[in-house]
Image (cartoon, rainbow, N blue to C red):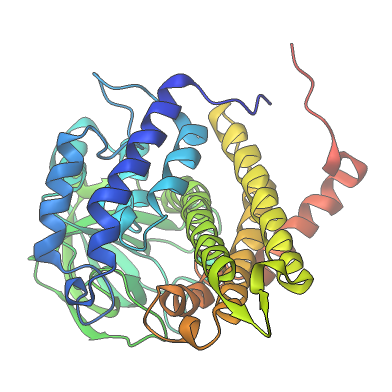
Length: 400
C-alpha cells in the first residue's frame, strides 16, 4: 500500500486541525460547556455544527456529489485530527453511533429508506441508535444468541424482547433494530427501522457507566408489541447478520481512528507539562525515565496508525479486513488506556484532577476494550484466521 495521502485529504486535515484549535478546544477548556454526563452541551453543539457545515467539514464519511470521496484511508486521517478534542467527533457528525448508522444505511438502504431514515441523520436533524446487544441470556458479541423476536403478521412485524447498553437511545429518533425472525442459524436475524414515536416500546432506564457518555447515554429498552411495517426492513428478511457485519467492521475501525486522536492528545499534554515542570533541579523532560515513557507511547501510536491504515486500505479495495480490523481494535483500545494512564502519571496530581482532560479520557478509555467486541473475542477471531490460513496469515498481497 502507498502511505502517502492525497493533497485533497491533506487540505481537509489542515482545515479540521484549525477548526478544532479555534472553535472546539476553547469550549472544551470551559467547564460550563459540559452537560451533566461529561459531553458538550447540546445547545452549544448546534452552533459548532453549523460552523462545521459552513466550513465544508460535515459528514465527510459519506460520498456525496460536490465533494471529494476520501474513502476509509482519508477518514483515518480526518478522524484522527477531529478527535484531538474530546468534543470533536460530535461537532463534525462523525461520532458513534450516528457515524456507523449512516454508513450502514448508505450501503444497504433503498432510495426511499435513505430519504426517510438516513438524510435526517446526515443533516444533523436527528440522532440515531443501533439496538442489537441484549441482557443475558441474549446476544452480545455473539449475535446468534439474540432473543428479541419479530413475528410477521400480514404486512408488518410485531417485536417483543429487551435490549441494553444501546448507545444514544435517550436522544435518538431513528433506530436500527436487530431481531430474530426465525431459527435459521445463518438467516434467522432481520434488521428493522423504527422511529422513537412509534408505540410498543420504551426506555426502561439510562444505565450509569464509569466514564463520560455519548449524547443519549447507554439505555435498556423493552419491546412489547412494537409494530414495524415490511417496508422498514433493511436489506430484506433474514439479512440481519449481514447488516451487522456491514456495520460493525467499519464502525470498529472508526473507533480506532478517533482513539488515535485521543492518544495523541494525551502525549501532547504530557509532553508540554514535562517540558516545563522541574523537580530536584531537573526538568521532567530531561529525565530518561520520562523520555522512555513518551518514546514508547509514540511508537505505540505509530503502530496503531499503521494497523488502522492497513485495515482502511483493505476496506477501500473491497475486502472485508476482518483480521486487520480485529488487530487494530485490540491494539488501539489498549493503547488509548496506556496513553491516558502514562500522561496522568507524568502530570501527577494535575493529571488526576479536572484541570486537564486526561481524567476524562482515562475514564472513557476503559470501555474501549469492551465496545464492539471485547479484546478476547477479537483474539479468538484472529486465532480462527490463523488456523484457517496457517503461514498464509502473514502473506503479502501481490500487486498488478
